[in-house]
Image (cartoon, rainbow, N blue to C red; front, side):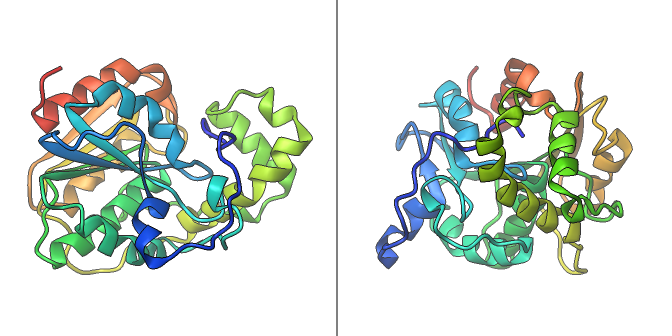
Amino acid sequence: MPDLGLRGTNRGTNMTAATQDSLWIRSYHPAPEAAITLLCFPHAGGSASYFHPVSAALSPRVEVLATQYPGRQDRGSEPLIDDLTVLADRLVDLVAARAGKPLALFGHSMGASLAFEVARRLERRGVTPSALFVSGRRAPTAPRDERQHLGTDAELVAEMKRLSGTDSRLLDDEDIVAMVLPWVRNDYKAAETYRYQDGPDVSCPVVAMVGDADPKATAEEVGAWRRHTSGAFELVTFPGGHFYLNDQNAAVLRVLTDRLGVTP
C-alpha cells in the first residue's frame, strides 16, 4: 500500500458530534469556490493523506476531499471497521451534507467498492453523484475467493510487497510493520468479505480505471462495472499494476479533470 499513514498522530477520540465531519472527511487544500467536489476513498491499509497530492494538483479548480477510516493516524484509538456496508452507512449522512454543489466520488481498490456503496445510498436519497470513478477494483458481480486476511503476518507483508505500492524498505522495519498490519488485515477482511446485495445500483456516469498488469483486477473484471449503472460507462486502461496511479499520476489527473469538466 502506498500510504502507510505515518504522518498522523493519535489524538484520541474525545470528539463532539459537531466534529464528526472533520473526523471522517479531510480537506487539505480548501477550495470553497470550486464548482465541483471530488470525495476520495482510500485503498485497503491506506489513509486520507494518500490523496494529498491529488488535492494539491486539482485545487482550487476542484474541491478534493478524502475519507479517513477509523483506527489509523489521528483516529488510532478508535475501533477498526471490517465491514464495507457499515462504513457506507456511517458515511452517507456526512457525504450527503456535502452535496450542495456537484459531487463526484473516487475510490481505489477497496475504496472503489466503498464509493459505490455510498453512491447507491446517496441515490436512494435523491442525490445523484456527478460521476463515480472506480479504480483497480473488480465489479461487485465479479468477485474472487480471496482470503489473504486470514494469512500470517509474513504472508500479508509479502502481498504488500508484491503489489509494489509501498517502499519495500518501510516493510523491512519491524516497528512500522507492527503498526500498520492491523489496518491492512482489517481492510483486507472488509474487501474480501464484501458481497454485492441485489438492489438499485446507480444512474450516475461510471468511469472504471485499471492497470493493464494489475494482479488484483483484470480489464474484463473491471469492465463489468458497466452492469452497475444505467448511465454512461467508460473503461480506461493505464500501463502498470495495482498501483498504476502512482506512476501514471499525470495521466490519471487528466482523466479526472476531463470527466469532471474542469480546465487542465
